[in-house]
Image (cartoon, rainbow, N blue to C red; front, top):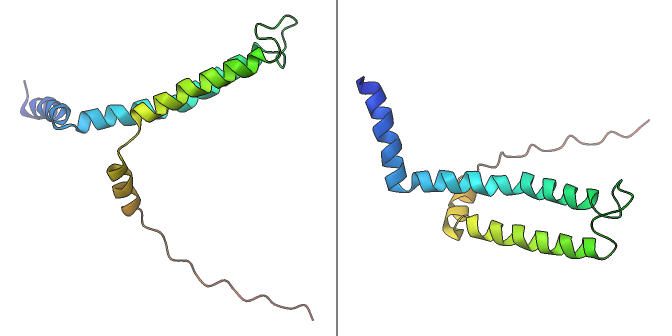
Length: 110
């Protein structure tokens, strides 16, 4: 095996052991909840009275219950994969806000 390939393999293994791999996995998992939420809500709307079906799966008021249950599931999923507070504060501290320029003075029409 070439030394470069061995180094890449060892580096990946080291990241998994050091916790960086866990953080990358957490980041990927936390991002996946957004499309899952949108697709789930779309399916609920499609299957409800507001959708195009003549005989909806979720009649009136049951669709609201389905939305509430689904939203709670996504909420607890988000809580489970959320970054720790210290990590969020460190990420906020790394953001560099560009300085704003003075706005040009308004000219009055003559």
